Length: 106
Image 1 (cartoon, rainbow, N blue to C red):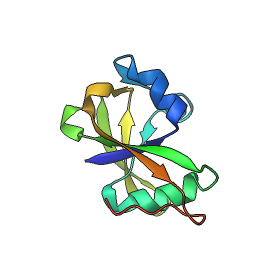
Image 2: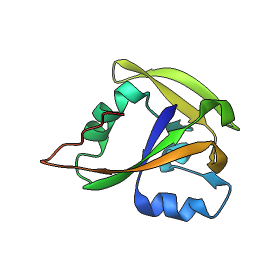
Image 3: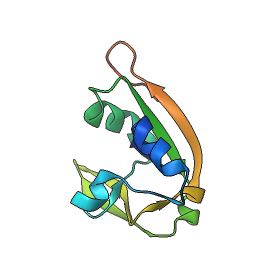
Image 4: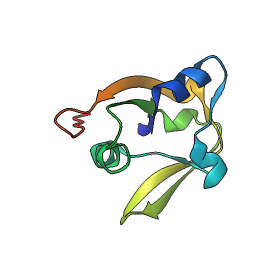
């Protein structure tokens, strides 16, 4: 599994269709994802100002678009080059920031 962090309204807008498109697809050309062990760091680095986000668990074998592992922030992260097909999303977890941080035990 790989994971993508998103906001509730963005996921709700996509659920009725076949694809989810993150803003980064238009600005950077890919959708940011994390490996399990990177999730907590990504939550706290990029979503520290959001009290609640969603964590999408994605089965890479079901992706309709190319998945590349690339360097960013001193680590190697998975990136999806194209929209995320909804049928590749296996889990959706609500993540709540507590005491100013997110914790993820995966």
